[in-house]
Image (cartoon, rainbow, N blue to C red; front, top):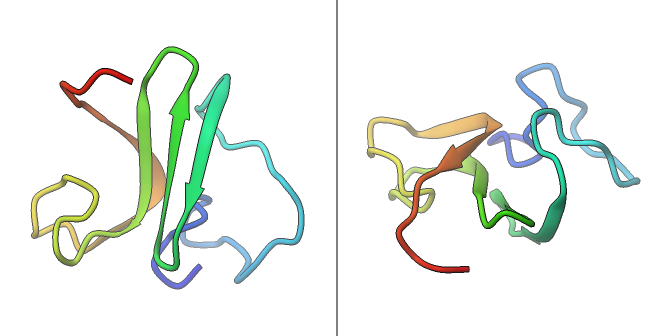
Length: 79
């Protein structure tokens, strides 16, 4: 969780061994976990991201190096 990829904030444990409720996200449909980031798509098609953004991988400005809580990202792509 060095880069916030679990989305539980700066005081999160370094790892977890079970599924957990993600604060603010209801009805998750798909979850994608990578080394430094995590994405969640909800049943309504909302995209939520957390983790490293050093090269803009999360679709956020480059000045945002990482985020440690899930953030909804606006997208124009249909799900």
